[in-house]
Figure 1 (cartoon, helix red, strand yellow):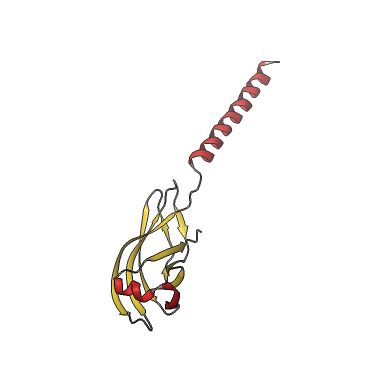
Figure 2: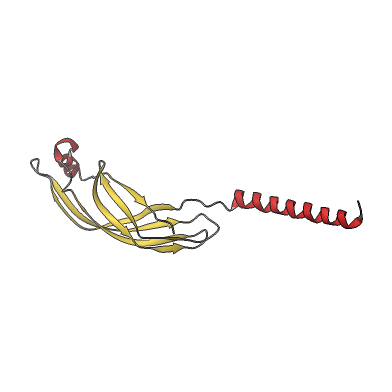
Length: 148
C-alpha cells in the first residue's frame, strides 16, 4: 500500500470515528424531552355555592399561572392547548392555554383564567353536598400540550 492510500484510509477512519462520537453525543445528551406543565398559585376570583342536600352546586372563577418547563437544550414552540379541571373524574372546566415558545432549559409562565361549574356533576353518588359543607373540593387537572 502506498502513502496516498494510507492517508486516505486514515482520513476515512477519522471521519467515521468523528461521526460515531457526534451520533453518540446527540442520542445521549440532545434527545428531546416532553415539557412539563404545572399549575402554580391559584386564586379564587368568584365563588358561589349551594350546599343544600337536594341540589348542591357551585360555580367559581379561578386565576392561575401555568408553568411550562423546558428541560431541553433547544427552544420549542407550543400551539394552542387546554387544561381540563375535574371533580371526581367529571370535567367541570377547561382552561385555554395560548400558543407560545419556551427558551432552552427555562420555564415559561402563562396566566390563565378558568370558569368551573358543577352542572355536569350528579350529586347522588359523589357526595357533593358533604364536600361543599366541609369547605374542601378536591380538584384534579389534565393538560394536553401541542408541540410545533
